[in-house]
Length: 423
Image (cartoon, rainbow, N blue to C red; front, side):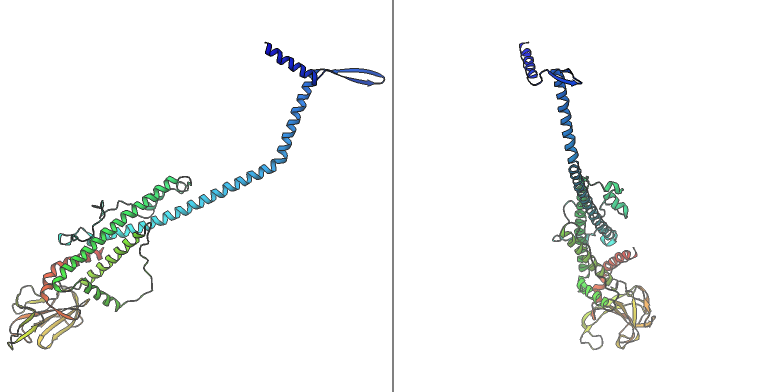
């Protein structure tokens, strides 16, 4: 109570000092009147005046500074708008980049599925398995040579990556979604690169198998490739369209993997194309070998001489067949060969059939594998009924025996290539 009285005493003292009771003298027409203004009335009037003055000052300041405030707000809005436009532009550019990379991966995926879908890329046979020193596929890639588990089919592929709606893909704040999308694309690139490397190893194994098959014939894949180049160069043309190949999507080594695969597949295709001309048929259905290729005693002069083919003896009139498709370039009497047929099979391969009793084809005729070209006889320089059979490659006569032994394996290679072409 004493404290409250002290405060009230101070208040009354302050009020009495600054707001004492005042009297106003009002004189009018010789009369004087007094108007008394109490202390509390003065205090109330002073409070009202103070509040009005403060309100006027605040409103005046706001009035004079509103243009500055509006200008500041406009600058803030413009800055936010510019930031939004930049963010939107960056996201659009990122979305286009992601779509471009997704399309690159889709093209690669289709190429890989085409390669996997060919019989040439089927699981290797026992003799075609990669050798011990051949590169192996990356770990964790087993069983993935026939499927990448990636959707294809135009828009569905990109929609699966980019989303089905433009509004969904246009949310600029969804950074996690963009990161996940790029991560998925990078994982897909890695899987495709591993598969490409595995297909390169598989293709190289197939080329090695072809070399093994042809090794007894003393020709190899390089000889076949040279024949393909010479044949192609003799009849070529058309507009110049440079090959772009597959550009890297993320990693630089990614492009080299597909470049190796394209080169390996091209070489394999060229080799199998040349092997389509390889003689794989039997020149006669039934015969026995009466004289081999190479050095022998001449049956007429009894001196050593070189024999340029195989003598296959049989019954007179035995059917003689073309051992590969081709065009007849000789048909009729030809010196010591007697009645002879020569067939050009293309890609450097030719065969000759001599000493026939009767020729059943003519020059320029196109024959297929197994077409009867004549009947076995003993015309020309011959001691008895037989077929003189020669095989030529790259302008040189070759021993036909290794060709006959390799025929079944080469036929399998030809069969794979023919099935690929039909697809």
